[in-house]
Length: 440
Image (cartoon, rainbow, N blue to C red; front, side):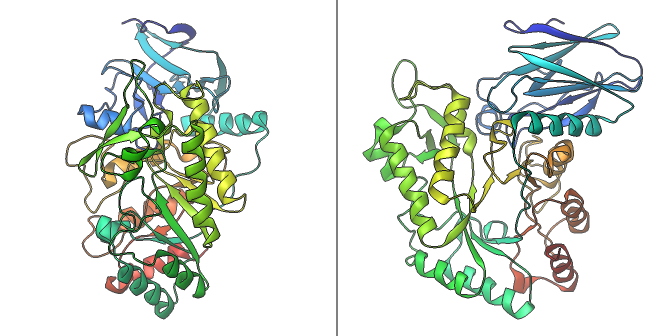
């Protein structure tokens, strides 16, 4: 097997029994793990999954290994070879590893640096590389994440104002140490129309004031690089949407039973609008922002500025930060992981979790505890170095399969802890576990 066109040989590793290869996925939901040499890697099971959960310009096959920004080979003799982009945070270098007899050949489509770490596990070697990369970039230390409660896993998109108020009351009566009450998807009229409330959130600002009046911080969910096909945003400003090279708006996937478009935040009008959205929420007192599906900001397409996808994505995050201020907490989800370093405070390091263990479609990017466990463990080396790792929400209600194992995983990650059960519906074990993990 040979390297793909456009990839040049950058390193070769002589391997023996016990050799392993670490693949790093492009964004939060992309599978990330270490494989025994010869094991077949996880790949998308459908084109929809690939569009929403993998890098759209990458098409790794089932044979060989593929890393976005970084790849590592444990040679079986005690050393780990970490091959990473020279500038892993501002470029989108891709890597391949193919087996040729007793040698693993590593290729890349851009400049890389090789770090050989003897006497180390893969995770230890990757953490050593991460510490060095942060120091080389002159980035500040990662900030810890506040504890939070999120509406998503109990109420999904059908959440109502009354649901938030009920859980706010339960936090008080149960004396739970929740810093942030985060309203998830369901409060806005459409994907992209963030300042237009849904029918169940007529007074969103008043709800934010009520949360803050309880002495807690207010948080909110947005997918800032998306405009749904049903949104006023897409209908009224088609010139703000990312374009195909040959013209026409560029689809960024399909979800919420509609086509999705990527918003080109390099367009002055789109940039002004998005700054207004975030600064408006910040002026209400919201200082925790879960920004989701943000890989849509880094897909290939024609942008008003002419910027490449990674630069445009990072510029978009800087725009958001300028609107919310330096002290607000930004959680990136569905995020290109390495290009987000230094620009978000915490990041989802896996697929969504779920009330069941296995993914329905067998895809290790799809919502499930199994997929979430896989990539969070693969990215554990990042926690406290690049950002606070978010393993996804703590869900421990009676209807959750393997809830004790899932709680143990969230605790072991040691990063963000975000409860997402209906608090009044927890049994004794679920309540005690939630209280324990929220208490630091």
